[in-house]
Length: 270
Image (cartoon, rainbow, N blue to C red; front, top):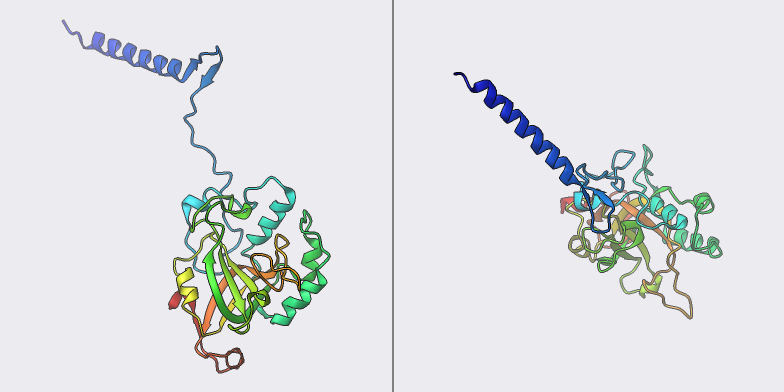
């Protein structure tokens, strides 16, 4: 007698039973009598970050961070979200060359924006003053370090760590100056090239650098005054953020580096 058809029917019945059992296991009653469905589909990456333009540098996606933190950062505050979107602007360069700005330009901007509120859900007032422009700035690096590594900050979704936070760059026109006379640049962790490190930045001591990127109004901070030395110290809350490029001059003075014969090397090539 041929028993193969009977075996196939039994196997089919067993498979059906297993499927029914699996469904019943996925939708089970909890101890309080409520049903809970086990989630099997992957979570949507609603917080992922993808620039809406070509990056101005050879960046490398960092999935543990770029897949977790979107352009609006990690705050529910509309002002903080607007600030984060501005900090995450990698599209300022376009097809135009960077506009060279000076230390005095940043000081003048500080004076013009002294009465602007710190929290800006609408950033049109600072955009009129220049936020969003593609600029370049020549200075010495006093110090560069990973900031907010213990608790993170809103723009970086409050994720602690070095690879998930900015590199804060303190810039001076003369390395002998007080840090209250400094200005600031920030390297975003989004797509940050492997060659952009605090060690490489600090190794440029004695040679001016040319930092290019977006001009940004950082109302989260305050400038030094005759009676106040806030942390971090700075002369203007206008900064280059995010940084698009860093070039190191072969000369040792700002005046020499501003000449047409100055030689520049990209940080990633050092």
